[in-house]
Amino acid sequence: MGRLSIRWLLGELPKLEAEGVIDAPVAERLRAHYAEKESGAGRRLVVAIFAVFGALLIGGGVILLLAHNWEAFGSGTRAAIALAPLLASQVLVGWVLVKKGESTAWREGSATLLALAVAAAIALVDQTYHTGGDLESFLWRWSLLLAPLPWLLNSTAVAMLFLAALTWWAGAARVEGSQILMTWPLAAAVVPHLAQVLRSDRRGLRAANLQWAIAFFLCVAVGLGLDNRVPGLWIVIYVGLFALMITLGAVNRRGEEGLWRRPLEVVGVTGSIIMWLILSFDEPWRHIGWKHIHTTERFLEMTSWLDVVLAAGLPLAAILAMALLLDRGRHRLYFLWGLSVPLVAIVWPLTATTDSRWIGAVSFTLLLFVVGIATIAEGVRQQNLGTVNLGMLMVALLVVVRFFDSGFGFIFKGFAFILVGIGFLVANVVLSRSLRARQGDAS
Amino acid sequence: MNQRLRFVLFVVVALVQLAVAGGAIVKSELALRTGEAFRFRIQPVDPVDAFRGRYVAIRFAVDRAPAADDLDVKPGKRVFLPIEIDADGFAVLGQADAEKPTSGPYLRLRAGGIYPDEDGTRFVWVSMPFRRYYMDEDLAPEAGRAVWSGRRGQREASVSVRVRGGVGVIEELYIDDVPIHQWLADNADNR
Image (cartoon, each protein chain N blue to C red):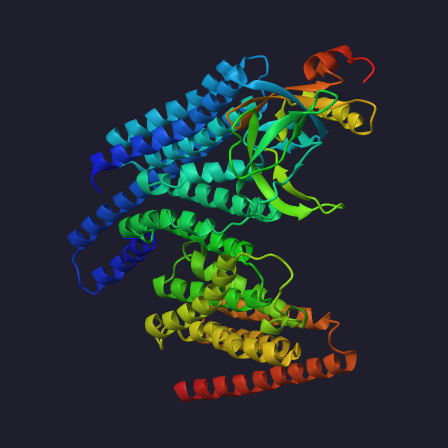
């Protein structure tokens, strides 16, 4: 049972006792049982976190010491120094696997140390023999050697390190103009570990951390991997990706969990708002679609196809997920967030055929506005201040962006602002009347 | 999953990790101990790598080679380059080919692309694998500065490379034919 559920249960006990559902000894036993569990879980978590940070610092320190470049030692000595930390941490991890496999702290800590020892070893060998090429090549070899570890050692910290190294590699390789298609099959190495973590404790901190890492990785890697032969496909891909994240996050959510335990939702919503704000300008919609396909540069056929597959697949997956997984009553707001997908499916081809930049900009301005208002309304209905504030933030950002947007003339902007302002006041009057009427009915 | 199987798999992974690091050591030591030595002219700059420390970045004066007539390689694929010696005794790259040369020293390098030059002869860009000379964090910037001035023609910078079976490993960085550490010591006052 999650910490929040336990806290809820403990909070309910006095009421249950008072209403005679359970008697005092039972309540006392429940209290003792869960109190123990909660404090034990907290202590274990702290130990695990300290173990990971300890390992990170020690491993990082070893890398820094090696980076000094101890030229005074001969190459043979330095080779031995390179392999020693690796071998030592391998032995440690082996021992942990056999003796302490159940302890999260030992597993995560030793695995983290090993991940950094691998980096230190290949770095020092490169340094000693002046080989190994660019940072890109180093990060690639490191990622490859890390790939099996998250699942094998059941370590989320290493999974996060691995995704970070892989993302860094993809960025560095992209700058060098290399192909980064291999990102995807390699990143799939995290999937078995994700399954592992979700199976053992899907509400736990490790599951949340891993999902954060995966969500960030996806946001960056999708963009880095784009080939952009057909300009503007990124619009469809990112709108689909964020809608999918929001939907999956909403489906997974149980009750009132804190934001940290809802990574997919948080990244999806934040990404959507940023994306929609960008798309509410006319610039992203300029020269997009098959009419402007690039023919002069060299492209890799596979990467171009991956673009198309993502552009078709992500929105479709988002729609399917919404249709199959979301509950019409409970997830009303999330359907609204998903509106961006059908919208982009209509607007993108329309823009591509007509070459008009304004269809997209106006559509996404309206979308931001409508979803913002609906979010405020839903927040008021649920009496949830966080949701109200989110909606207000959206509308406020939209207002600020449009106020300084030079794409529209001052007169147009002025009238639009005044009209929307009047709209708000009217809505305010209507809302307060209906509230008063409802209160009147109630009393 | 079975605990024993997991342990066995981990041992395999651990051995691969050791083999990757150790294999690089063996490959480099073999080239350094038994390889043939060549001197390449370089044009360097000085940066830092978060993981591997400070180094003198090296740009080879020769980073392209004439392409064999029938050579057709995609960027990223390997080509074989025989090493030849120019009139000043420095190494230059011979004609690139997809096949291993039957005799003589050669390097196996990643090809950039094939382009015709000003006279219409085809050449291939190659990325030299030894692009960095790692040094003590205090010395590297000084060495970098020293080599930098070589670029303006006052000093000549070069590296000696040991080559064995297509693998090249940098042995030493030279400024005006003096090994870098000695050069830095000699010029400690008037740098």
